[in-house]
Amino acid sequence: MMMCVDPVTRHRESSGCRCDVDSSNCGMEVDCQPEESIVSSFDEDCVVLGDVKDMRLEAEAVVNDVLFAVSEMHVSQSLNSAPDVAYINVETREGNRYCLELTEAGLRVVGYAFDQVDEDLSTQYHETVYSLLDTLSPGYREAFGNALLQRLERLKQNGQ
Image (cartoon, rainbow, N blue to C red; front, side, top):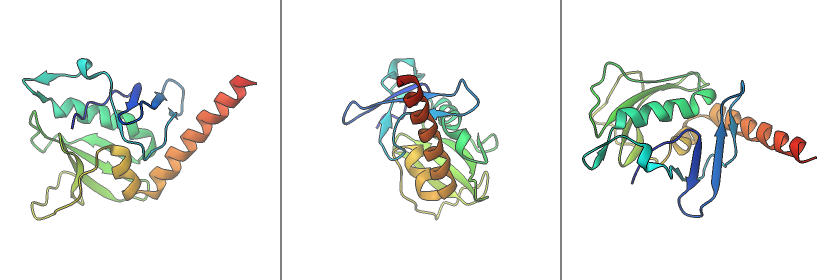
């Protein structure tokens, strides 16, 4: 699976459904469902090291994409990233902290505190950050839904 994330324009892999994200205004505008499987159509813009994408750059894009819907999120500075793995710390709107692992397989929870990797923890991989946060945080779902409603309202106003 290719995990290249382009925070401006995405395409849904299976149906060609277009999803647009516009963060130029104060709020984030999203024109897609949070549960949709989203991957970039701009793979040529990603940094590729041999046949492996630089996951640290992917992680930065993931953070920038959903920062509006969580309390805190950043790429770990203390855990060692590699070209094929990066770690992201996230605090949900409910105050729960997680350490996420990002690889070609997707994203998964590897710890329940910032910069913590529990080798014995076996959690499910999620193809997208949207899917992962949707399972972890009702506050994320609400923020994403509100952003979607705002976008739809703007489209409705522009159409009249």
